[in-house]
Length: 132
Figure 1: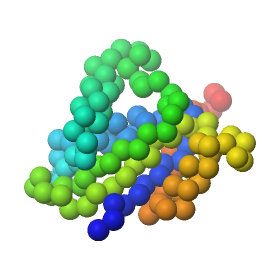
Figure 2 (figure 1 turned 120 degrees about the horizontal axis):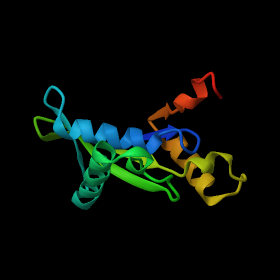
Figure 3 (figure 1 turned 45 degrees about the horizontal axis):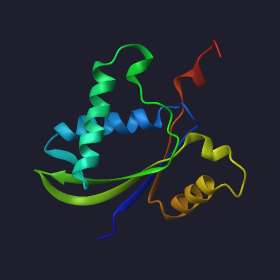
Figure 4 (figure 1 turned 45 degrees about the vertical axis):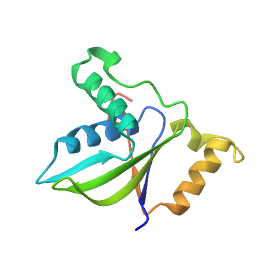
């Protein structure tokens, strides 16, 4: 079975990477026997370290820096630690959605959207603030 492709859209700073790290961090521990694992163990170690930084860091240093290059993450959805399905998550540079039409990041994002099985939209809480 082909891996499911998921793309999250959102402006730079909206929290796409934070959401992905939190999703992985929580699901790595499991919910009702469902867990996430990375297909690349080194990528899993990196994600775990970044999630721990979010949990234990102080102030704005706890959050990841804005994504400056597109990174593909390959996860497995497991049940009782047995793989059910793989899925691909594209963490792209948020500024790519406002690039010129021929920008390479925007072209890659467009191709990913066409192949995606699901699209999530991430909006910053600041967008709902009355102080904006």
